[in-house]
Length: 189
Image (cartoon, rainbow, N blue to C red; front, side):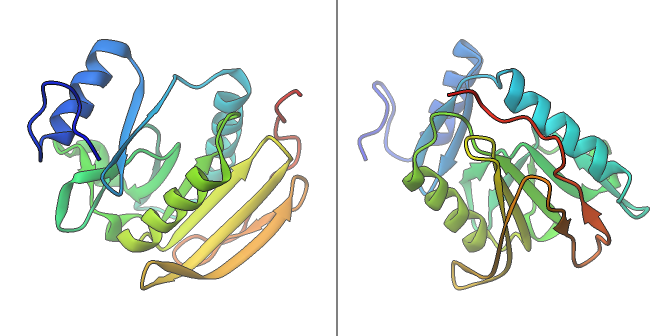
């Protein structure tokens, strides 16, 4: 990949930070590639809000749901993702750092943006598995489906469970119960 204009090789994170500051775009570095997204639109933001409200009621003490927090790739601080929701130890809210350790992530949620391509979704899923994030929920308002990924090993999630809106997501690990997907918004055509 060619570095951003005016950037020396190895300065991708610096470029990402400059782009984010100057444009307001959400910038992530997934596998050494800059991924830029506009701010969340109504239904995307509404989906995140509903899921967070529902998730908050299911969290055990000691864990909290955080929006717009980034998680780093172990051993590569230039590679990071910013999921829509992260469940982390509650003391993350008192941390001065900006990259959460993926091993501290109990649950991550990505709501697929309207224009996302299948390859982009697959690349992000692989990134989370490589990072060792134990549970990843991908919610797709384009078609009203969700996929729960679990048990990462060698860059691949071994457990994959698909569902549709209206079916609850069974939570595992430190999270218990079922996360409702009833009445989540769907993108228009």
